[in-house]
Structures are given as C-alpha cells and as structure tokens.
Amino acid sequence: MDVRAFCSQSRVLIVAGKGGVGKTTMVAALAHLAAGAGLSVLVVELEGRSGVGAAFGQEEELGYAGSVLRAAGASLAGDGSNAGGDGDGTAVIPPGTVQARTITPDDALLEYLADHGLKRVSKRLMSSGIVDIVAGAIPGIRDILVLGKIKQIERSGIADLVLVDAPATGHTMTFLSSAGGLLDAARGGPIRTQAADVVELLSDPTRCQVALVTLPEEMPVNEVIEAAYQLEDRVGIALGPVIVNACYTPVAGLDVPAEDAVAAAGVTLDPSMVSSLEAARRFRQTRHELQEEQLQRLGHELPLPQLRVPFLFTSAIGPHELDLLTDALATGVKELHDPAQVPS
Ligand SMILES: Nc1ncnc2c1ncn2[C@@H]1O[C@H](COP(=O)(O)OP(=O)(O)OP(=O)(O)O)[C@@H](O)[C@H]1O
Ligand SMILES: [Mg+2]
Image 1 (cartoon, rainbow, N blue to C red):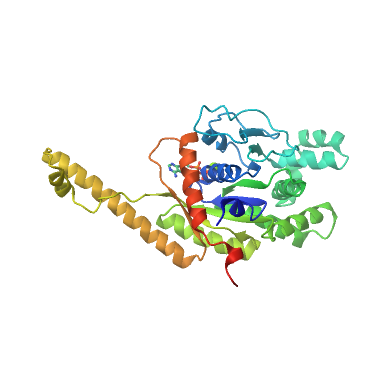
Image 2: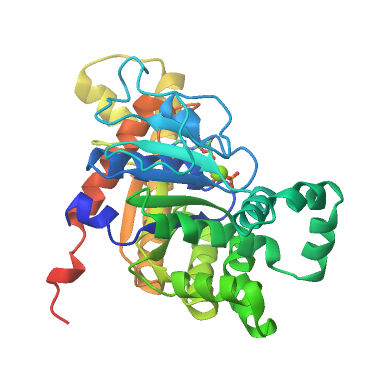
C-alpha cells in the first residue's frame, strides 16, 4: 500500500496501547512517515509530558499553542536545525510539517466557554474550582471536552493527519466510551450536542481510527487482543493495523553454535569466551522464537494486519533512531494490501 494513502485513511488516528509499549515513539514515527509523504501532521498529547519532541531532537515542553517538531523537507538525522519554533493553534500546517500540542480538559473548557461568549466568566469559574465540582458531578465531561476539541481540530482541516498520543489502555477505553455514556445520560443541551458530535466522529472510519501498539510478548499480546475487541464493541471505532513494536530482528548465522562458528572462522578463543558467546547466541535465539510465537498467536486471534517495528539497541530514541523506525514502518506499510484494491 502507498504510504501517503495509508496515512490518509482517516484524518484522526488515535495511537493507543498498554503503558510503556512505545505509543509515544510510534506517534513520532507515524508523524515522521506521514510528513515525509507530504502530509501536514498535528500530534496531540493528552497527559503530562509524553516526550514526543525528544525523538525529533527537541527537548522543550509542548504547549497548548503547539510547537514545530519537523519543518517541511527536513532531514532529521542532519544538524537538527529542522526543529524549533512555535506553532499557532489555529493556523493551517504546511505540507511535510509536524506540529505538536497538548490538549487538557481545563484549556479545552476555557476555549469552549470563550467561543460561546463566556470568556469573562470562564477564568473566574476555573479559579473558583467549580470545574472540578462539575467534572465530579458529570462523569466523562473532561473526556468530552478533550474529544470535542479534537473534533473541532479535525473539522477545521488545519492538518491532513491528527495523531493522538492516547493514555494507557484502561484509561483510553473510558476516554473513548465517555461520549456514548453522556449521549445516553443527557437529554439535550450543549453537552448532548458535543457528545453526539464526538460519537459521530468516533464511529466514522474515514474520520477516525485507532492504531493499537503492542510488544511481541505474552501479556501485551493478551491485552491488545482484549482491547481491540472492547474498542470495537464498546466504542464502535475502526481499528487500523496493530503496530508490534520492539521486535528482535533475525541475525544471520544465529543457528550455528558458537564453538562451530569460532572453528569455522579459524580463530582461537578462551573457552570461557566461547561459552559466553554461546549463552548470548541461545538467549537471542530463544527470544526470537518466543517473539515469533506471540506474533503468530496475535495473527490468529486478532485478524488485523501487523506492522512490525524493530527493537533498537539504544538508550534513547533520537532523530537517527526515529529515521530507522520510520523506515521500518514504511516497509511494513508497502507490504499491506490496499483495501481499495481487494474485491469485496
Ligand atoms: N523500538 C524501540 N527500540 C528501542 N527502544 C524503544 C523502542 N520503542 C520505544 N522504546 C523506548 O521504550 C521506552 C517507552 O517508549 P514510549 O515512551 O514510546 O512508550 P509509551 O507507550 O508512550 O509509554 P507511556 O505509557 O509511559 O506513555 C522509551 O524509553 C523509548 O525510548
Ligand atoms: Mg507515552
């Protein structure tokens, strides 16, 4: 499948998965992939500091107004001069550019009130703590404010692709089902309208999809299968391919015992060194086999295409590593079938 077509399947892509599986890293790689294909990208961070900028070589904290992570036509592994600068929360993002911003319920509420002619009271409401009281009384209202803001961004057309770095799975489920819950509870008024708009967004696969991220290990695979079915059943949201992050790449010659490899190379090594090499070989081989087993199981139990991303032996993901991860995603995407070309 063509990379640009892949990245244009829905305007909003929510990247979700268990804590620590690499959601933020995959958001960065998907953003880089889409921008490289000429799309304009807005990354939306929902909770605290996700550190999405670090992969682009930028350490500054993101703001509500947004910052530019990648300028059009930039090569990341270069001198880093691509990054930096502030975005404007409302301006159209140029093609090939990645911007990132945060959305918090409080800011979204302030903006909502300001848009509805209540700017003067909004600050006072916030400082009086009434928002927390209302949020306590109406479960899901915070989530609706954030999703409502995402819907507004999607509708405004400022970016071709809006990538949402979602909270860890359990919270994502609550977050995404909040609109349906409020729609059932509220009879009328602005909350119901907002909830209805959000439900409409989430249930339209041309506007919004979820990409689940997992690791090729037993527990994360179990969790991603459960999450996928729950998202489809409870939220009714379309699922894109599952991104399997941190896969061990095959190493040539790993099936040859260390002793034989040493003999074949015609070198003499201390026996303790040979046994260490053999232990390392077996460890890597076993890991690889276990991962393969989990990948097969995932394929059987969850009929979604997989995009496999390699585990990089590095202490941090910076621009160079981001290039490698993005290349791996691009290779996987090119191998995917184009749904438009599959006869139904
Ligand atoms: N393919 C990879 N190879 C090597 N390291 C990786 C890879 N993907 C992610 N990491 C590292 O794993 C750690 C967790 O990744 P990341 O922050 O993207 O996960 P997350 O799912 O967003 O976590 P959280 O749930 O805390 O938000 C980070 O230190 C990141 O640099
Ligand atoms: Mg994260």
